[in-house]
Length: 351
Image (cartoon, rainbow, N blue to C red; front, side, top):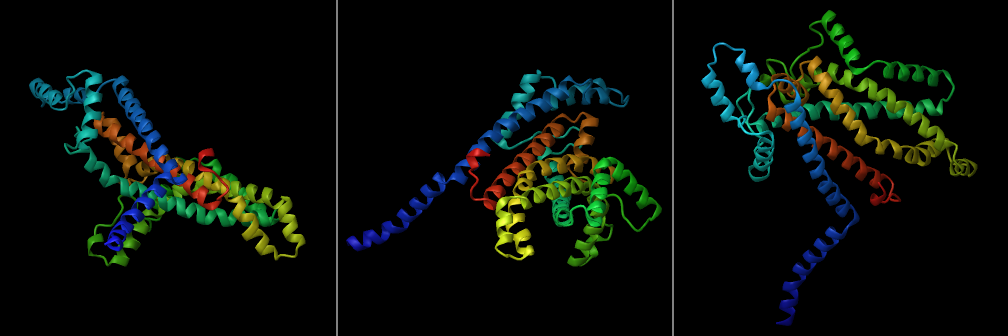
């Protein structure tokens, strides 16, 4: 009987020990702290966006008054329908209460649809553009930065430095305008507008991937050029500093191959500061994506937010900015966890 009880208790004890180990783990505690801090950040972001909207001149009702076909009675009915007849504090607290209790971000004034459904439709497109740009930027900038450092003061290094300075000298909207001009003179070679072609549903799965890739090409280039230029210069500088360290000279003195010294010992330590910048890089990509989306008519969160701001669509603007803040918070959290994984010597409490 005692053996049977022991066998019954063992799975429960193992589960309890695993749960205790998970809760007391440094990474888990750090993630929980960051998420709790994120709640305050998201609340402040929503409050700031709400009061900025309220302090700006005019509102959605004022745009309706300019339409002579809408009667004053109908305008008052719409005002009561969306709760705009309440005080500012009542509107904001009611909106927060709906999010906490029902997960309801309100109804869009313009689209007459739940705000959450509109945002969830657009977020994947924005993330696709931002993440693709992040992958392309790192895949190109890191190797070129390493080449520039290895070929310091040679012709290759000088050419790459000129390219990086030129890339940083052009803001993303100037690059976008230039690419739009290129698309116009080469039409229909480069598609502009939307994310897919009209016959997208009729294509095979591989054809659908190629179709989306072809449509994302110009926005991706416009979004990546500035980030690529800065990242390449940082990689070059970090690797040059690392190659001057004593332990690198010791590795060379031991007769290790130069490739092993550079790509195993030096690169691993030089890349840590770049991982720290990953969260800020994602933030800049998201803000840059907002500009790029409007230039290339990309159906993402940035384009939706701009349209909502112009139309004074209060709840849609607030929810869009809150989701942008959430994406940035998670981007910085992922960057910290990646930095910890790359260098176990780093303590998360010190980040």
